[in-house]
Image (cartoon, rainbow, N blue to C red; front, side):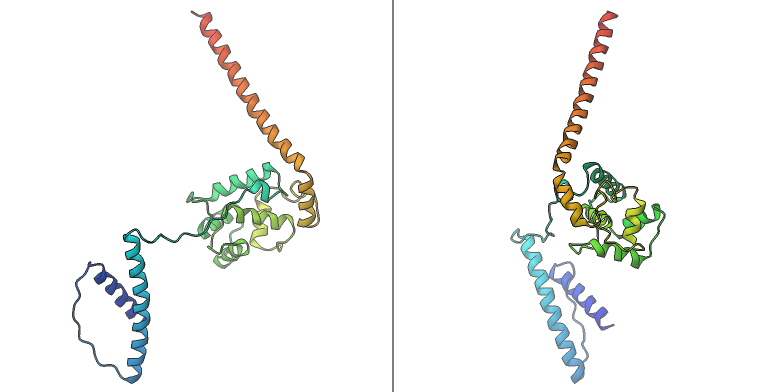
Length: 235
């Protein structure tokens, strides 16, 4: 109850400081010796915390301070996750975006809950929290795309318990990372060595994509030319 009362006092003081509410004098009963010391300590802590908040808000309003934002780690999945092919990473990205209902580039607890339900393996609230915790490197209680890829890295390396939620997710995702991605290697480190040695295959995949795009553009150009010839024939 003391914490609720203190919270109300802090809220009221903040409104008074912002000018949203006028101060009102109230009668205060004189506390006993023990209550007096506890109240003084709580008031001191509250004043310190409130003072810091007010000072920061004032600085932001005056354009002096800058809002705190979490540090963002740039991830290039094609270079960091070399044990996977480009197609596999694109399949994982497609799956990630499909379940990112908020379109904020994160999968939070509720979105993960929905994902597991759609995969046919619903989890308890505690189970979902443990799933996130296992790969949540920045401790923000949600999964970014890099952390999502870590699920499949751990699955490919055999680092997930068979009955764990992440193992179930990787198994039901229909993204095969056990043979193509790691070439049947027994451990992740062996797989990584093989993936590095297969950099030529990675470059070949890029060239193949470029050739396919070039072919599609040429076919479209030919169709357009044929259509123009047909128009001229009817004139």
